[in-house]
Structures are given as C-alpha cells and as structure tokens.
Length: 342
Image (cartoon, rainbow, N blue to C red; front, side):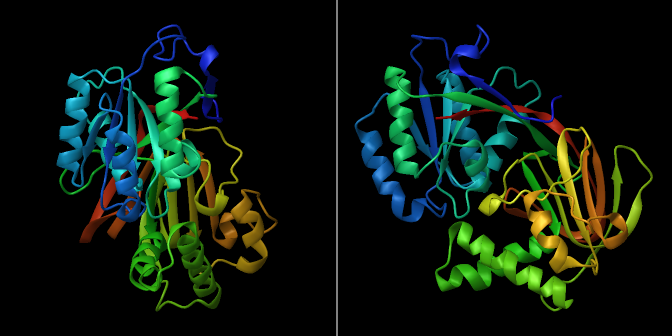
C-alpha cells in the first residue's frame, strides 16, 4: 500500500463507483443528539431535513441504535451514509460495518463536524460547520453540483478486548492520552472550553507536566510492545498512540518515521530527554535532533502492534476499561473505508 491515502476525483473513480455522472444517489444520515455539536445544532439539522423527506434520517445514541439505523439503510440500499456525530459515533459506525462476517461493498461515508473535537471528521470528513456541510451534501446528492473527491483510508482492527468483540476505528491511545481525556472532560469542558481549543489546552497542560515530571497529573504506564512480530519490549510510557489519521487536533502530526506500513505508531517513554527542544519538530512530524529511542521518542510505520497493558485505552475518544488484568491488544489493518470530501 502507498504511504499516502488514495484520493480520487469523481471523474477518476472506477466504473463501478456510485459516483458515475448522472447517477441519482440516496442518502442515509445518522445523528447522535448527545454529540457536542448537536446539543445546540441538531434542531437546525432537523429543520433542513424536514424539507427532504427522501433522506433517511435516524437519531441514535447507543451502538445498538447505530446498528439498527445502518441495517435499515442497508435494506433501503442507500449509497451514502452521513454521520452527524462525534468521533465515538463514527467509531460505532465503523465497528458495525466492518465487524460483519462478510461486509461486502459498503456505502460511501460522509462525516460532519458535530462532535466535541471532531478529530476524524477534520481529517477525512466534510469541511465547515455541520449545517453548511449538510447543505452542500444535499445539493451534491440531488444535482451533482460540487467538487467531490473520495479519500480511502485503512482502519485499525483491535482484538483482545475483554468481550472478545473486534473494534474498528482510526485512533487508539493509551497511557497519558486516556489520562488527558479524563482531565479534559472533568476540568476543561466544565469551564466551557470545547472543540480543538479544549484539546490544545489539555495537550499544553500535559506537556508541561511531562517537562516537570509531574506524576500526579501524568503518571507513566508500564506496557509491553511488539511491532510486526519483532521481539517485544517492556517499558514505562507517558504516551502511546496508533493511528491512520494524517492530521490530529490543531493539525499536529506526531509521526516522523520514514518506513512504509499501514498505520502510525508513536510513543513517548517515561522521562523523555530534551522535551522542550524536541517538541516543535515532534508536533510537525519532523525528526528532530533528539527524537531517538535512546532519548525516549518512538515513531514507526507498521502493520501490526501487540500491546499488553493494564488500565485501559481509548479508541476514537471512547474509553475502554481493562482493569488491573494485563491484557494483550492486537492491532492490525481492519479494511479500508471510503470517505467523501466535498
């Protein structure tokens, strides 16, 4: 697979694509009323769709409700599934689609920025506010007007969870990332700060804690990691992330490996050296002078990660508790999803 995500303009797509010129497309939209952007914005979405009875619109909160909505869309043979929710809602949709024994051809996905951070939608979704993006999508569906492209990305498949059900997503985090999510929910969102700004505030606070070795806020997590079947290594980490996203919140891209592979693995060891000097290059995806394993910085492009740890992990913003029992997670490619850019 190429290191770059596959991007096709509509006139470059294969003949079997749903984006053939003149083809009338059907749309199914899932809205999560509890997503950050929908707490105030959903009435506007409902009003827009009230004038479009041909669009299948279902509101869903739980994974089972998401599954029911997608099953209805499948029976109606919709061409495009739009997700009006946050990263967790997108994660539920991907797990439902790719967790099927034989998923077969899947609809094109159109992601609206309706979550608290909307990290996935900002990378592979529709640009602009949810309202404006939906208006463009409806115009394109009905008239074909608009500059559309499709981005294909691999997904993470996570196996080994306590309930033994494979999970699918695009961003897995452990150690300080889980601690950061809890800090953001409890102490940043409670002050009225949201979106990418909240994520940026949390990142800044945790980087300061790492520089000061403040273990009350950022405590290391012991984990064992094996990449691509290589011998495993056990150490303490401040941060572990595995992702197929090219852009994280605020546009940061903490990957600097020159290898080929399917997805990114980045980790920060306990007590990393020269952190303040290394940080600017690290966030831009550049291998700075001090970005080396010897100094506590790890970046690879890989095909498989075996990660054994306690506590828990996050997948697309959803927290999964592993308790005190050491659990081996196996992360591999779970297929490729096609996302509409418009």
